[in-house]
Figure (cartoon, rainbow, N blue to C red):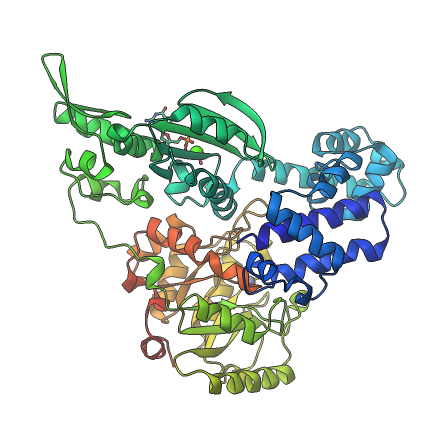
Length: 573
Ligand code: DGT
Ligand code: CA
Ligand code: ZN
């Protein structure tokens, strides 16, 4: 689906027009259209084919033409023209915390600040201070912001990497010469953050493939261009490396380039012990300096040469490797298809972009049989937390909708604020009305381990709290996780029958795989939730599943693999 891609492009366009100084209503039209395309429950290409683009709110004639052009050509000529006036790199400036469109425009107009390096220079040289409304403090904040973003840019989150990889795989798969194509590297292992994307293709005609690869529209520049290996940079600065090998050694190459580096080292050590050798071409028996290939075509064959079972890519890390190499039976890891519902999504009752009904439909489309609408609670004003008055109306709406469904159920949920002292944001009477209660922390991250641990513990002790959402509070590329005594949190979760969330939202991925692996060893049970704020976010479930697999979880460890009846028995009453 191109929905998100188009929405992102229109948003970018709106922002750049704003910087250029275009009329407010024109700028707004882009934002509005983007928002509604994001909230669209169906594939925009289908909507276009059926001539229904005009039915999308906020999509007028001009917008329709732009969408059509993009769907046909994969680019937008008006955008290409616009970035000649305002360079695309200005968007990087806007995304620095404490800058935003207004300041970016000021800096661009007055000082020609067009990217992060020129912003840094202007801040360090004191030039920003000459501008209206810019104080010492602002400059300090901007420099701090630049630092955080620079660190974050070294590794992108798994969601972005998957999306970028998919656009390449989709295009390359169309080529006749491509027999097999796989992501490799950290992306295939489902790591939370990815430095660069590695792709591997099985083909007899590498030249033809490379020629197409480096000329795809999303390619900005070419780092290396060879017959069997090329490397490019995309327009949003992602490095993609492509290798082409032939069928005979595809398995060995996939194993090698999937890594991790440490897993490869362990494999090589195992090979030496057996008088063998392994590289990207195969597994070889070494006798009197003569080498005989014993496996190379599939990963499974190669691993079998070491008497190892097939090791899922997510387990090829430093976690649990002793179990792998000592020949223990590996767990049957959870899969996306095991999930039967989601307990953490938002609706227009708080800061979500879709109605309860639209969210429910999207969940049904994904084969789910239940969905908890867990909007923010009253105190979280910034996210339009729901007042007790409105909760009654929300409950009525859910009850009415549920009458419509026979094998699907909407649950009345909440994402409950845990305040600075660990108090809960609704009283017990209100809490007792919910089908399921998720509690979480959105403020006071700096309090330190002791206080934060206490807040979480107090919440878990409540007889109404079933799940702790995004338990570590991190935000990839923006904020480190807060400090907390995770061992104590795990113990309390077990003692009070509270499930810890694997939040699948790409900038969160919290718990992370190491937390999950440890918590599982302590007897903790989990849920995987998307924290969706619009229907398209529901696709993030697969990212949460990657984290769960990396933490060695099976179906049994995860609450939302159960039927609704089982769920209601499993959670505390
Ligand atoms: P990243 O890109 O930092 O998120 O992580 P990876 O694991 O994708 O690392 P990358 O892209 O440098 O290399 C991809 C895979 O290729 C890596 O997982 C294992 C393999 N590989 C690359 N360089 C070496 C090496 O020097 N030794 C070994 N044994 N394997 C390597
Ligand atoms: Ca990589
Ligand atoms: Zn939250």
